[in-house]
Image 1 (spheres, rainbow, N blue to C red):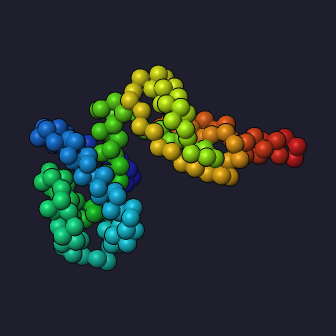
Image 2: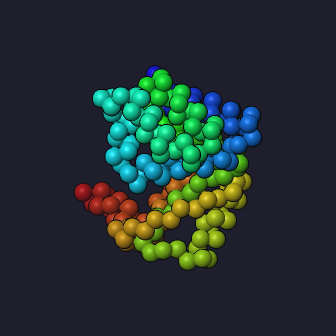
Image 3: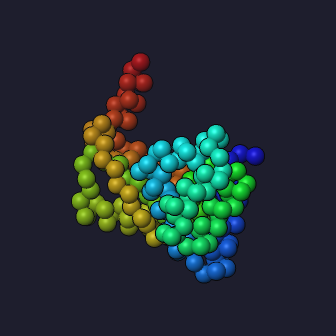
Length: 177
């Protein structure tokens, strides 16, 4: 079974448990904390995925790092995953949990990549356009990439709108080649 399917199943079970205990927001914050720790400390993620490191050692690391900082419901999934030798899935589970949380709360994450930082008016315009088309509350992530030359790339879920000058130049190169 693909890891993403397994991660989704664990995330769904955790989401259902958190919903039952009425701690969905807390667990979502905890999973975001886990992702942040992994993103800031790549070695931590490598250790969790390393089959040579014993599972009780991994559980000890998770206890020292998270047990007092996360909700007991969140830590319970760490325990279960460690016992089932699935520690390498925690990051994927955190991502899947975030998707489930956003779906439940009606949140749409959007990424806008531009050459320069967005102005407040541009930010409001992107938020309004995506909000009107999806009917969801928009959380806008901004990225700056000078290689675009001009225009923007808007990513909404699996859809991407690329109006960058770089893309148009590449298209011109292909038509002349």
